[in-house]
Length: 403
Image (cartoon, rainbow, N blue to C red):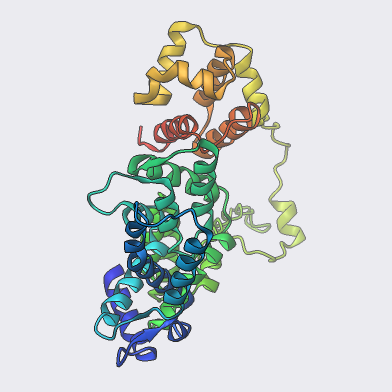
């Protein structure tokens, strides 16, 4: 669906900026902002490539330490950047590619960004190059911030495809874990604006479903589809997305059938209707002759902190701990020493107790709150560290996999 959508977008916006001649930066301002930004970065990159031969001139033949040499080079780069433009013959393909990349990034941000950074063949890049390439996209700035924070904190000279992919997936999950319908609607607003530029009434339903599928939230995609079917539409404006994502209201059960005061026979059940007053005689007739026994009070639900403390009173023994690790951590079960050292300040007891509490968690949302409270906050752990990412991914995989 992304390619047909981006093709439709290309057809519409190419009318705004046709390639009848060279296209400079001033004409890019007539395009949708995320696409204009992408193309602006493409021009910057062409200027950088044009200036690369200047670096060879300084190799032994020119003293690069001289202030005059540095200033001359910077002035030359500024002049080229100011007058950079797309040749008419190159413009259509540049515009088409920009639209495709921007739409892909809006729908599948993590997957698209990793592919754009590393391509099909590169598995490792200098960290500075990774940061520079990430700047081509405007949306989801928290992903770029996480990359820069990781590089600054760990001083990494080079980054691998796998490390960047794990980091971005972890950050994206952490950022969106507690989002409400309005948050999702705001995140998809740029895609809604591009949809209208492409001539649609809103975001095509397959793109909305692909967006939630990429975030492993196909439950939300199904909710939107149900809303779309009920409203007989296949396009979702971002304003309607908030309503489409609201959980469906439960259907009230039918009211108990009261006895007919004349015949003593129970009449047919009456469906409950909100705001429908019940006549006094029906209320009276519906009461039992003798009060029913009070139902047993349900066992109170323990807050997370109490559940954790309860588990803390009974830390698992060595054999039980190994079984917990296999169950909760899967292939990462053999990294106990690393997890204890980096995530629990060397406390094997805290590590075991946390696994015991996780074993009692009823799902990933509850487990993720345990990790946040009892690992990251309690032990002041950097959630972007490789060990934290590996531990979180292992626990999440256990809770999200069918069992």
